[in-house]
Length: 382
Image 1 (cartoon, helix red, strand yellow):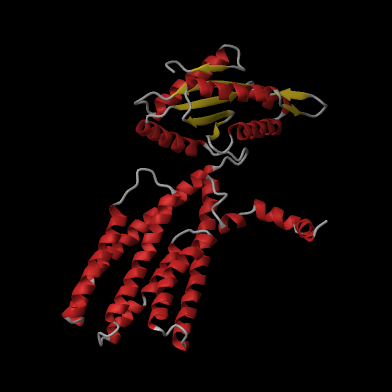
Image 2 (spheres, one colour):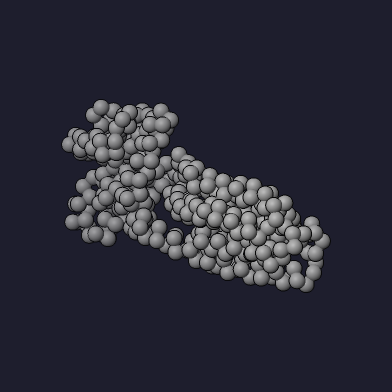
């Protein structure tokens, strides 16, 4: 056994804990679900817009102070920079994406921290010989302000380190340019900046941890670990809007586990819970990470298939139905319980709302149960 394998073997309990805890989710967003990424993106985006609006207003309100404190040779260039500063932050407020994603939020954050950094360097270079040293001190605090604002965003550790670097880099580059970076005074400033970065990252991770806990409690079904009805409704409305905009097909599957009440009555609710968890595992294995599905309520499950027409969706439903035939649930006494499901299939029609689509696919499911269960039936009108 190699040294690497020995270390892996020795640390296996630790690695297992890391894998099943939130620790890795706090370090990187690689394993975050698509829905949580969307939730976090909206959370960050709202805060970016609010602070950007405040910055845009402050940039304009500060102009009279510059006018009173600076001579025209400094005031005019600074006025132009300040107007550009305010305009760029105003664009953050009015620029609304059609569908918000994390990569768009990253771009917003880069602009949010980069614009003040550029303004800081430009103002320092402009005012270096203005003979208003007391007035310039107010501009010196801009990097510290931006590091402090890092704390209002729920970022992962890697994200926080990147944006902290983006906040501190302008100050380092400026002092390196003027040649006083390696002085005791500047080391003291950078030490203070680093201390604030550490505090900000701690607050960011605490926010992210709390957001993940609240998200999981509000959106995940505790029995099957699939998303609950609330999330499915949100996903469905989002996919309907996307289908209407892109003119792409959209299909839904509604599952009902056959004779589930009899399983609960004859073998107990614990066995019923085991059957629900088994079907959830089947959905994960058959639908993977690219499609959307969850527990719609009771023994009903819903799958959303963007880009699928009726034929393709029916094929997916048949595959899941056949897979159920291959699974058995063992009960006490050596008896096995078979698992079958009735499935309604519907394709979204142009102009159809969420309630209408669900009503149609529910009709297909009702017909499947009326015609003997364990079958796939297309909804009327599909």
